[in-house]
Length: 330
Ligand code: NAD
Ligand code: WQD
Image: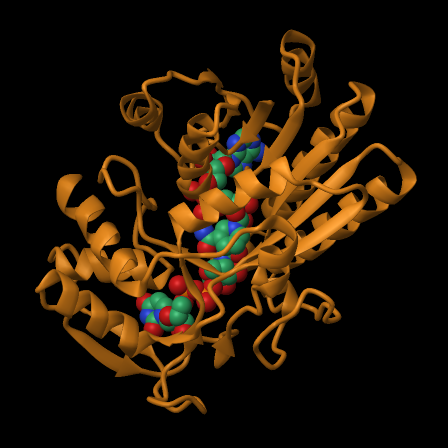
């Protein structure tokens, strides 16, 4: 297939491009570079042997997006492009609602106009709110605690309505849990601007000595060691999930959790990182971070049954590959 990948130079998009190329798909990447670097394109070339077609375009710009739909024969769209910093979304709600919703509307509108019937969307486990894990796709969505999360819930609704109104428009809503790690080559990985918000990139920077110590946000949750529990998933497993999702897309709206099904605490992750990589990560326990929940992990059964996809990489693989990327690129 010829697949348009929005946000294809970002963390998850770039890893997915590798898997798409590996599975003989042609990839057209669009990315505004608002949160990524052009060097990633060369790295993708180095890893895959193919230099993907690339356009530096903001996908909220309908006229520019339409030019791409007119230039290329596109079979499907995987829409990663979005702003994703939870805290920033609280201080800049308009930027988040505008970027994340207008992009989804422009792309789905162009798909309808140009007869493209396959759309895969990056959603998030955050749409479940605070409900007991394991989280299942059929659970009712809950209001999230921040505008970023709302953009995911609203995008899911927009795409559901568009699909219900248009028979030939099939959608896959992929709810990611906590993507971490990097491609095993160490050439691409998670490279956030400034001080990372997420746990794994913060840990790699502390281990490297670029940040003094990790703050562990709370050890008084109702979990085995008191720290928050999440479903960390290797980004290459997630990338493989996207290939399965677009290749096996059924009619209508399809919702899938992409997680491992296993909860791992903050301290378990940090200890695994230190042990596997033989490096120290100084940390201190501080108060809870507002908006955090105690436990969040997936029931990944549906994706296995319907897509034939299952995460196979371990926590050890995740911490090893995240560290290799940090070491090789600093
Ligand atoms: P990322 O920031 O690394 O990648 C997003 C890419 O989209 C960036 O390259 C950015 O430059 C680009 N982009 C943003 N707005 C754009 C626009 N209007 N036009 C064109 N390009 C634009 O983020 P990521 O971690 O790779 O996340 C990809 C998607 O998955 C996002 O939609 C994110 O919300 C979602 N998601 C991420 C996580 C996570 O923890 N990383 C979890 C759940 C869902
Ligand atoms: C993981 C755990 C923290 C940083 C976020 C978004 C979610 C999704 C994934 C996009 C928690 C703890 C963290 C630190 C810590 N993104 N932590 N010290 O909050 O589960 O999910 O990213 O869709 O929508 O909300 O991920 O990596 O920030 O935190 O102790 O410096 O690590 O409290 O328990 P989170 P995270």
